[in-house]
Length: 240
Image 1 (tube, rainbow, N blue to C red):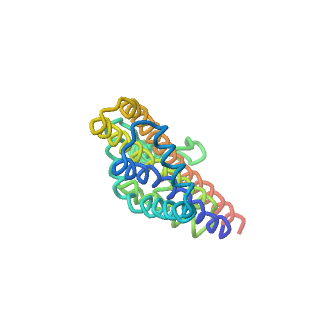
Image 2 (image 1 turned 135 degrees about the vertical axis):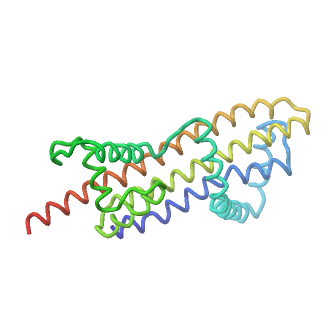
Image 3 (image 1 turned 180 degrees about the vertical axis):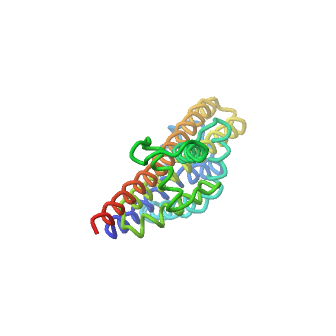
């Protein structure tokens, strides 16, 4: 478990750098608008030919890392708004578990072995952790329980969270690039920056969908890891 947990550090670093890179590019294009991608390539080549190319590259990496971490609150607000706009539910399994528990409460009692998997999971979650109204609180309780039982599901879920943050940052960054390209079209009177606007907007949507997927996978990993941890604990108590 400790090995998996420690290996997450470099992954988080990489995810933050990638997530912050579109903001670096957007800032560069605001202060140095270019007519075409060829002009941008020439500017990059010119910077690379200088003696301080390594220092510039390291500075860009550092700034990308800082920005990737600093905008997480803003990107979460952006992600939440898009989820409402496009009706994306990243807590679908948790919501299903809560609904199944409410049905079981008002239904006739049944033997645990005769219940469906979702029903057994709902009863276990309620017995061990309770089912709060805020789904984010349930994720926190699941993580604490799984850490106490030394489950690798926590480490897997954390890597999915890091990927989710990276993709939602990229989505916001691509949307910002589309806005910057539109502004540069007006400033320069050139057509090519305008062609980039729909491409960046479409990439922003694709990155948003990817962020939703990783958030769903994280939620499922925690719940399924919890189920097997409880099952293992029950079997161990029965053997004793």
